[in-house]
Image 1 (tube, protein in one colour):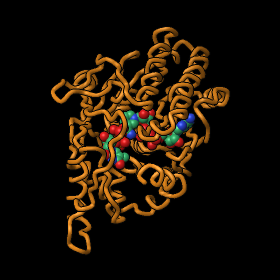
Image 2 (cartoon, rainbow, N blue to C red; image 1 turned 180 degrees about the horizontal axis):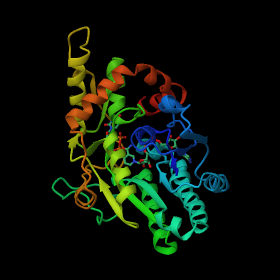
Image 3 (cartoon, rainbow, N blue to C red; image 1 turned 90 degrees about the vertical axis):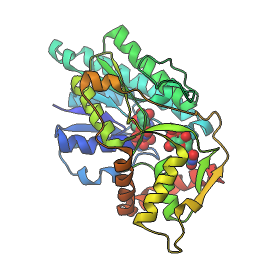
Image 4 (cartoon, protein in one colour; image 1 turned 30 degrees about the vertical axis):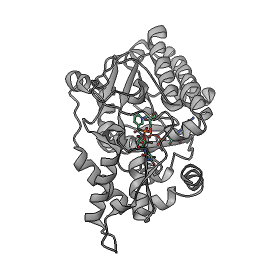
Length: 352
Ligand code: NAD
Ligand code: TYD
């Protein structure tokens, strides 16, 4: 038995692949285009593991994906591959449409063709699990209840609109062709191997470099945060027990204002690696121009996956953020290796 994972060299995908081999142990094919966000260094411990077959390629290359499926005969596809950074989607939406919508469409087409050719039994057990985001539901008012699986889709950024498009395609392939799909909509993840242009790793890396910590607008935008390993365990649970055609919201129950996240990181750094001048890292906080169309609040109601599949996160925000800061302190070589070329261009262009 084997599974196909797409985007397995990115942040969540690489955590998933590493955890999968450790906990489940079933072989997997890892298809990743190695964009700026994909790093083979994330997989350095398993590059020689026979259970891990890495293929560099695009989910939009339907013929290549069709060949891969025929060759490896996976029992499931888990689709992490995407363009994932909202700020990049504002500056350059094209690649988001191409990968998140067209790419997912091509992947679905290849999956449908492969699945149609399987035996009746294999067709029944095959799964296409699509990994999506809570951002498709749009922005919440301060006192509105959290997003449920039936909340209306109201995406506000090119990123969330493109993910919404892919979610609709997945739904349609189940409804129209009977492809056995599952969709998960998760809140903001954080943890090891998070590319340092996203909020939490950016703040850690900048603080350690003595650089400003750029907080957009008033810093009171709210997100729910989930430790990445908990997201991985939720996906494994949905794959194993989820009902075909269903959508599962995944969240950490940790809704926080951005400024409180940044302050929490500063406090941990003050304890773990105090500044030479004795001052707090908090002094590096710098309020900068807000993101256009910035969603004010996301919050997730994850009661369905808890009730129906018995999944709950293991980490609190306090335990998860401590582990994360410790990981970045212990893995500064990794940070140095991923913050070159394209990363520097982005930081210069975006924050100058
Ligand atoms: P990421 O940007 O870190 O990784 C994406 C990976 O996909 C990279 O390795 C990249 O090389 C690969 N990729 C991009 N385009 C590709 C293509 N056309 N073909 C093959 N591979 C391609 O993203 P992430 O944060 O790990 O997110 C993974 C998935 O989870 C995405 O679908 C994202 O929408 C979703 N998600 C992310 C979060 C979060 O907080 N990061 C939360 C909820 C859902
Ligand atoms: P991000 O990690 O980009 O995730 P998303 O926009 O998908 O939620 O950003 C998380 C929050 O942090 C978001 O409200 C934007 C904010 N943010 C900053 O305030 N400063 C920054 O430099 C970055 C990258 C994000």
